[in-house]
Image 1 (cartoon, one colour):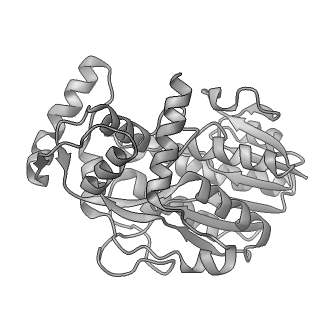
Image 2: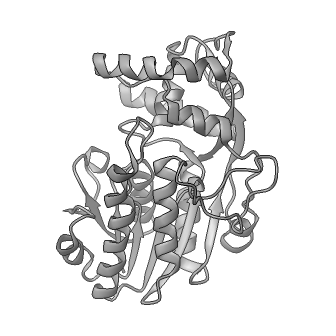
Image 3: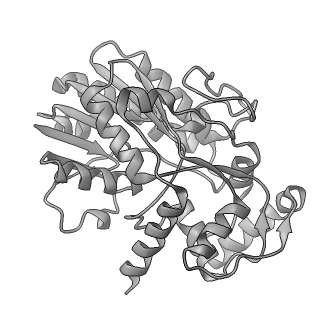
Length: 323
């Protein structure tokens, strides 16, 4: 059976491709630019932009199952119009290409950000409404629009999985979460920020995603959460796993938000990545604390490993890669 993966070179994609190969699947990996995470793997690499319908039709020809992971993530000020062609238009193109290719099932990687986080202390499950506020973050809006498109599809079997913030090994770029873990390990975060979010191991997300392809009911959607963790708790876990002693100072949210534009401007001048941005602060400030994965546990066998094990494995992977 041939499976195709869009966004195959990203963090989740790199782990998904490895898991599929380990399960004996033939994998066609659709990549856009950076494909170093796939180096040495026995996959068929195809360069394809999800904004190019013709390229997608050719890339998905002959596939039985498609995992659609490709998306543009924005925490550095990119607006709605910059994200929509990939996150919404690209999803529409993937759906059309799957229909044309006779794909049996599409597994769409959405995000917890597609759903309203408030009320933050009330359980958030698959029934929580989509983000529909024009003032919401552009990423959240586009992921909500894309998921609506997928769920409205009638020409092929579709399933949606929605992880929370992903962390774990094979994080080659690295991701925003990977950078945060490294900053805490190396003492590059002078003070901690208020707030927190739900973090899930990328390998658990991959296991849930593959299970969705194999046994989920068509048209269903599944949240894949991990553990709500404050920034202070994250720093403590990193320190316990071998990082430096975490900062003692805590920046109140009002002060961090006041300084965010200056942090972002400095990073643009130096060419480095900002420690935080207005968007990442909003995520930490508004993240729901009670995301429910009971449906995925019941129907897909999904389970989230202990967060301390995820951080220890992540730091070990970064260390091994640097050596």
